[in-house]
Length: 452
Image (cartoon, rainbow, N blue to C red):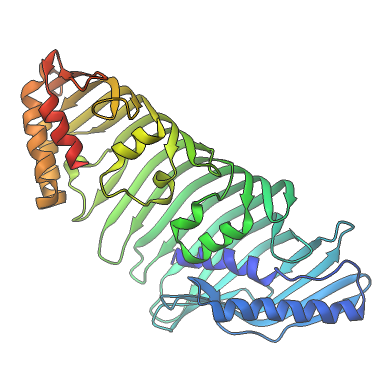
């Protein structure tokens, strides 16, 4: 059901991405209609992850200096068969002096949602909708947006679940736009989302979600390709800098396989820079509480019910962003780039185990191991962590589990109210010597690095 939200957001962008010269006249209305039809046609034949299912009959008329848009039966489909249909899309387009367009969108008959099997799941009613956008003159860029939706409800067909949304507000504020490169900020506020199955079980629920992000030099074409295909390769040179802050509370999800996830609260910020160059930098600050997950993929002993992390990195190779993992692991690539990684704080806690740590590492080709630095680490429940690795990773985690067995014997044990913790102080020298609590651990370190 959450796929309906993605389909709805993309539908709004597709429905209002026409192109036409400035000025309003019957001739320009005909040109606008032709361009809009061709753009929808491009989407229909693209078969991207999200695409128009068929090219609708578009009507554009000129009246009192405005273009009135009318698009009946606009359908947006996903490759897995899910589809959202707007029985009617209406909008007014006002030409602006700079050649862009001010658009006001209306969905007077709401939306209809279809599942992956092609069956109609039900209708989405929007009690409050104020949808305002500004697009570039060529229709290929969304310059600004203010989308306000309230008291949305899902009326199911036979056998489908129910859904409701108290409020959703999306605001896009531009700073500059030139040659398809956008700079500005985006904010999203969502309250009271609930999607239930026919048995009344919450399949997805979010009490509160706040997102605030910005970008400098965002390539809108690459962004569009990323959203359409999901291919992380489009992240290459997608922007110069970007940041995202998130605040979420009351998240619950039940998947089709019965896997359940929940999060009481989470809050953090991610900042990325140098995305258009060969080396990037990042800063991550994140904390959460009340994380719960049941399923076969992750052992409860590894689940961080409570977590906090503060991490910075500089001169990071582009492969870390695009996901193209080197065949020989990350360390040689980090060394070649001269990367630095500083972990100011790491806390991973659950009732059975705890990991606390901090560290400062510098990578370079002149170092025997490719890296130098130091770190401190505190582990509680090492046996539980090893058991969790074996349960979650099986044979793929055997080498890591063996390394942790060896690591446990090198730790300095300390008794505490929740059990014994093992303390570690790690030092890596440029000559390749690795000491752990003053004891040489070079062989163990190289073995763990090979697991990488």
